[in-house]
Length: 204
Image (cartoon, rainbow, N blue to C red; front, side, top):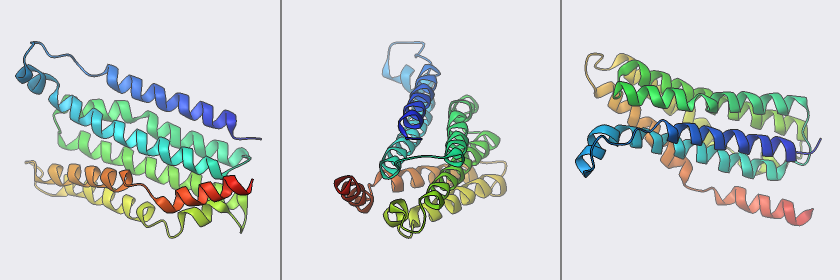
């Protein structure tokens, strides 16, 4: 089957995820900038990070399916697994916000990020196997260094929050730095993939 329904469904789910996250933001009790910082500041920061991640996944998902003409059952299930992991973002983001960066919520947020990265890798792998040896997606991702580095950085952050300075904030700070660092790494566009997409569309 063609990819149009899968893409439309995925876009709808991602839009709902973003909507739920923004609805979780609480307006300040007062009307000054300090009220905004004290009552909503952390929520805005966690929302910004999770929004960035959802945007990164949407962008990569969009480009990836430009290189796919038809999908089979395995691709559909792998895509649902990715959407499931992403759909947990409002919950884990809200928990981090409510706890003011407590250890356990930060660890669970990292596990959520790691699960989403693994799910995306599985989806990517299933598509490549479906396309065969001449897979345009295989050519586009190349060595996929960012895809390989990201889980390791997530795991570093999770272990840091668990093992370093358990009663303090050093480990949690390292974990958050890891999560933000991966997001920054993925914001930088991969021009190689863009060129492969353009060449693939032109050849069609």
